[in-house]
Image 1 (cartoon, rainbow, N blue to C red):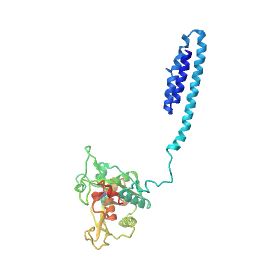
Image 2 (cartoon, rainbow, N blue to C red; image 1 turned 90 degrees about the horizontal axis):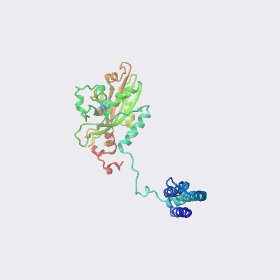
Image 3 (tube, protein in one colour; image 1 turned 45 degrees about the vertical axis):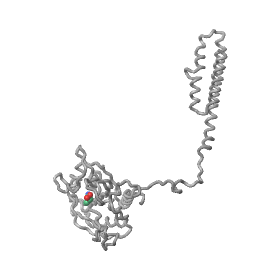
Length: 343
Ligand code: PHE
């Protein structure tokens, strides 16, 4: 029995000397000192020994147990201490080396040009007291059409055919749905913008996409007129194009505004002389807008005799195309990295 105990100690020492990992030490502890461990078995069996041997063996086994515990602890201490010196050896960083970025091996990427312009527009409008709103891309008929003065039988629905879900909802055709949501959460006077992705059932070509981006804007206050609308649109365009932009308003039809306009800008490419971008007309159609229709205010629980407002819907793809001279809208969603890398 005595020899067996000494042998256990020797085995524990060998096992400890051969390991360098903390997890292995735990295994060793279980093997010798755990509930079914070799030494534990001996201590448990003490009762069966003749009494003259019992105290001697018990004492020895307990001594060895303590010795193994100490050996384990000191091995753990050594391993933990050496971990740091090992880390310093293995994982040191030479801070004087060039970063992968500066050597051109790797670059971090950047925002998509649509996001860039969206954030710029958000900055311009927040600086003028507008709040930024969000809305869902899957909308109900009510928010996308009904509350915008487009009842189910209205022919204007045909201009904005879209994708419907089986439960009767739809992919929003314009950010104007955010106007309706804005009126639910804000009491006049208020100014809000709502950027977002919109969808239409569209035969795609160089200037038509089924998925594109808009920023909606809406301001409701006392006695808002077309003059207010023009003022805010001119500030927006000046900030975006970094130059004073000449504009004109043409009548445009949208059921949710009255009067409604198409706002054109003097072509920035040819300065109004006529080129392929403005189809030789000198003007580029950029911004549908108008004064909020009284019915729309009513749907939003706003009294049109007390309040009035303007609204606009700015197409972001068109804006980016103007800014960089991009000739095909389909590039935006092509996923072609060579396209986005240019901006
Ligand atoms: N929602 C319209 C569209 O997408 C644009 C618009 C917005 C027109 C606000 C007038 C006022 O075609």
